[in-house]
Amino acid sequence: MATPETQAEIEQILGQVPSWMETIAAPASDHSWGIFRDLTLGETELSPREKGLIGVGVAAAISCPYCTHFHREEARLADVSEDELEEAVSLASSTRYFSTTLHGNEIDMDEFVAETAETVDHLKEQEAAPAGAD
Image 1 (cartoon, rainbow, N blue to C red):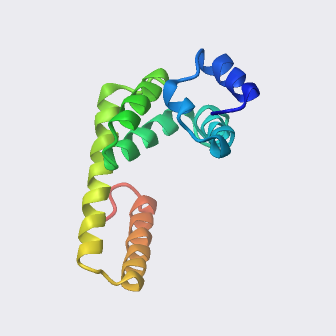
Image 2: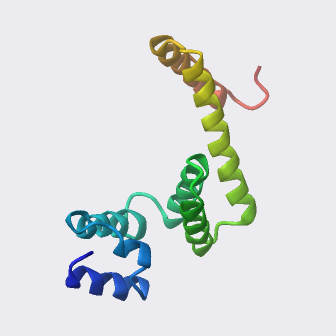
């Protein structure tokens, strides 16, 4: 259970102290609120839209219905469209799919890093090429 000061802050910001926050053990409750407040709700390098889309993607990838529900609502508050939410979930699915392929096939990390660098260089060259040049 969070300290009375932290509980008051949570209620001020969220309008209530969600029941799930009350289940966080005392040694971690104030700290856990700080992480949530500062990263999810605070001003950071990421916009609320970006945070919402990342949250939806991660929640879908870890198959957490609680996080999925929360982050979809968070994203909607930031004017993320349903199409964008679907794309974020599809991107998370794609990342998880290829991660499984890479790990399951024990792809050599050094070779992967080298190939990725070559691919990035190629993509940069394609971006820099004048229109119509092949």
